[in-house]
Image 1 (tube, rainbow, N blue to C red):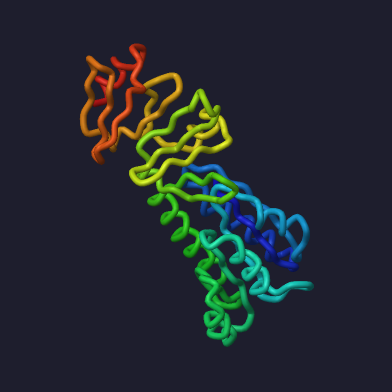
Image 2 (cartoon, rainbow, N blue to C red; image 1 turned 135 degrees about the horizontal axis):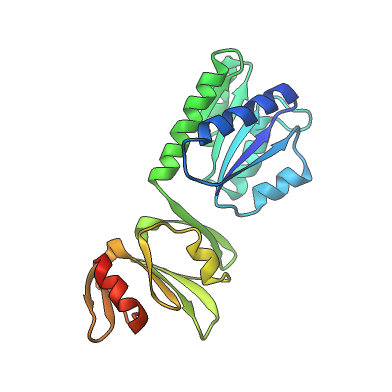
Length: 236
């Protein structure tokens, strides 16, 4: 899920941004939400502090109570992964903003091919996200973003009643259901057990006799039940 967060006190610009996002998103296969604000508010603050899958902020530089840069500063206090795009009527301010080291993705002038530039920037961002799909989750009160490429398998731990995400380097026990997690995965993940999904691309070999799956990083699991062996043979 991609969340577009717009903040502009000009209703015409907000409506135009909504239309641009919908047009740009049309050819892609992903879900998205658009959150619109005309100034910094409690609701916007809550979105900034709430872990969502992917966030793309489109912020006007000049706003009634906080500037777009001040909002960007609030975002970067808790989030260095989300995309921030600044809309400005003053090109000369771009250098000053860059000096603040807030990782602004792009500056777009409202008076210089605005629709085309915003469309091109959003396409670039979406393509970047599509090529680098990530799973976002909270573990031990910290927000994590893990590339799907790095995940070996995900399983439900019956003892802790947590869903554990296993990568080559780490394990992340999360307070979420296995069903909710797998909804965020793609076609490379297949079920091998009622409580486990594996990344097919990470399999080195499978011992079907002893129900052991070996990964290409010296790790293995025995979450391979009889009901899923035939399907796994067909896939491999």
